[in-house]
Length: 180
Image (cartoon, rainbow, N blue to C red; front, side):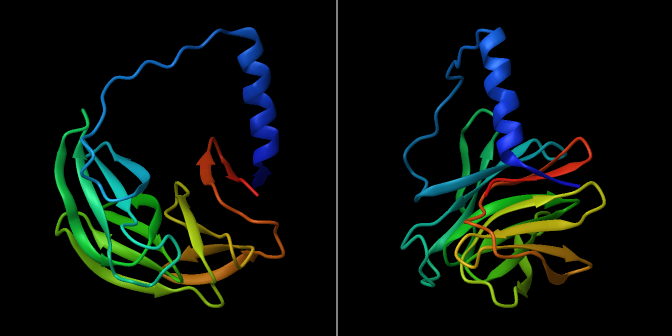
């Protein structure tokens, strides 16, 4: 089931009225990452992955990379996997990291630190966020193409179109949330 992020935002706003919350900085990375966009937690390997645009945010320049950090923010590899253009959203499914990169989803084997596949997204104009469901289905927002894609068994399909400008995608407690 796809739910509006507006409903989620309203719930968070209401929750904020009843409980006082405070943000406390736990750590900060050195300024060595080149335009970091997204972060993905890998609980099994106890690391974080970050997408680094390092160039034009919507340019096909092959300057982008994926970085690898420890859970306390230490940079393990600023350019752990290279050969991407403007990587943005990240989602981990098993040992595969799915990365939204312009008009394709790049699939990285995290055990090998290598790109194993590039999935062309038909009609994509500017992929942004990536999320995954518990069954391994991957969801990708296309902010410029105004679509939401679904990838099952490495086969992409348009799930929703004619959106306003989709961005954030997250699976939470049995529902897919999309910020549009």
